[in-house]
Image (cartoon, rainbow, N blue to C red; front, side, top):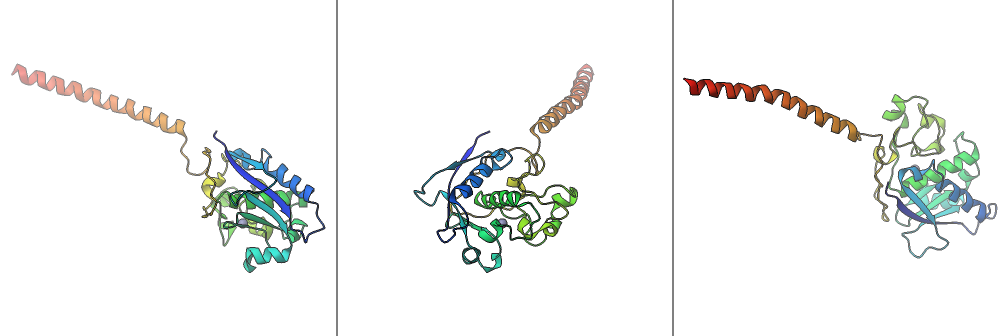
Amino acid sequence: MKTVDVLYTCEIDPEITSESPDSFREKIQSTLSDSRGWVKYGYNFVYVQSRPDKSVLKIILVSGDKAKNKCGSRLGGFSCYSPDENNIYMNLNNWMGGSASTLPLDRYRTYAINHEVGHRLGLGHPSETDCSNSEFCNANKGAPGSVMIQMTRGPDWVRPCVENEWPLDPSVYNELKENPRLSNTYTVSFPSVTGGGNNYDVNIVVALLILMIVLLMAIIDPIVSFVKETIAKQSKK
Ligand SMILES: [Zn+2]
């Protein structure tokens, strides 16, 4: 599988003194390099210390007020990704456990990172209005929901799926294929991952083609014999 590099850096807003920059960076790094994360979709996250230009993603821990300012008032209680700045604003209130999610804090943080990085990769939410309408969750009640569902809204928002912090396995639900694509200023390409969605299995397609050829031969053979016989009869007359 061809991998796509995504460069990123992270920092803590200078006004925040309650969190250490090292522990924030370590949590981001361990989440983004985890094999359960976007790595399984073919992304390779490369940490860089400084940012030469905006094509490098910046993940910043900011106060709830600053998040409200940066993410818009509608998303006042959430973290967000700004596609023009190529910045992820992690909302300190959520980061410290202030959200409707029932995930244990460390798992919630993992979710928030994977979800916002999902936006960086170009993905939108499965449904903006009511995630319970999601085809996948209705067909798989009680299964972990797509990481692109807004878990910060709590378990009722995720139902009939359950809260989940990792991108789903592409063979179960292909996040890159199932979720709407957003237009980002600094785009990242989609690696080719098979599975999930409306992807046709190549083996099935090949098997069907072979079957069609065999059937065609079976039909053509008697027709050719019939034509040959008819020509032979005609020439005898
Ligand atoms: Zn979101």
